[in-house]
Image (cartoon, rainbow, N blue to C red; front, side, top):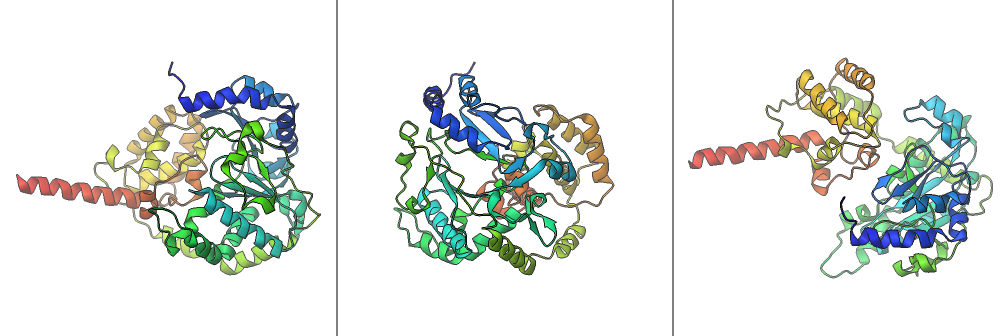
Length: 426
C-alpha cells in the first residue's frame, strides 16, 4: 500500500480535531439541509446521492476518513431520491429551488478579491443588499445569493425549474458588466517578473461556470481543503480587501452564517436584467447548428497515443463520475477523426472497463447506435462545461487549439513533417 504524502498526513492529522468541534459540525449540517452532499476522502469522493441526517454525521464521516464535505447549489425535497441520469421532468419534481453560487477561481487570491469586490458592487447596484461570502480554501472566493432572494416565477415560468440556465445567465451577465473594470484593476497590480496584459487580465479571474451545472457540488462553508489544509471560512463582504490566507487557519476559525438574511424577491431586478441582456446578446444558436451541420470528418490514418489531447487521455484512464457526458465527448471525437465504427466501439468498450463502476453495456449500445444514426459533429470545445463538469481541466495549449479535433490535426501535421525531415536527412 502506498505511503500517504506529507500533505495528506497534515490534512488527516487535522480532520478529527477540527471536525470534532460542535460549532463546525453545526455550521456544515445547517447549511446542508435540503442539499445533496458528498464527503471527499482526500483524493476520492464518496457515494452519491447522500445527505446528513444528524449533526454528528459530520464527525462520524471524518472519523471514517472524510477530509472535506461538498454540497449542491440545488435544493431538494428528498435528496436521497435523486437518481443519476434522471430526466429533466424528474429533476424538476424533486427540486424546490436553487442558490446562486458564484465561484471566483483564480491563480492569485489578490485577483479573486478584486473580482469579488466588483461583483458585490454590481449586485448592490441591482438592489441586492444581502449576500454570503466565503473563502474557497485555496485561492478563490464564493459569493452566494440564496433562493429566498429570487422571484419564484417570471413571465409564467417557474424559477425552480430553470436550473442551471438562469444562474448561468446571471453569472455571464455579471462578468460582462464588470469586465472593463476588472481588466483595469488587475492590470494595475505589480508582481515581480509578471506583467499582466490587458487582454488576458479578465481571464485570470473568470468565475467558474462549472458550478452552475446540474448536480455539481461545491465545498461547504467551514470544510477543509485537501491541498492547503485551510478552512473555507465565511467573510463579511466589507472585509474582503483585508482578508489574508492565514485568516483561514482551521484551528482559529470563527463561525459565521454563510446564508444571508435576504428579503423575499431581493434579486428580482438582477434576474430580469440578466435575462433581458441574454435575450439581446445571445449567440445565434441556429448559426452554430449550421456550422456543425457543415462539419466534415477528418481521416487520421494512425491515431496514436501521442496525438491525443491531454484531456482526452485523462478521460480514457476511466472516470467515477460524469461518464455519460464522457461518452458524448468520446463518440464525437472518434467519429470526427474518421475512425471506423468497429474501432470506435472497441475503444469505447475498453474505456468503459476502466470506469468505476462501468456504465451498463446496454446504455453504450444505445448511445453508439444513436450517434451513428446522426450526422458527425465535432466534440465540445475545450472551454465547454463538459470537461470541467467531469473533473477535467483543459491545458492552456488545448484552449489555444479550441477543439480536440484541431489539436489532433495540428499534432499529426507536426509529426508528419518531423518524419519527412528525418527521411530527407538520411
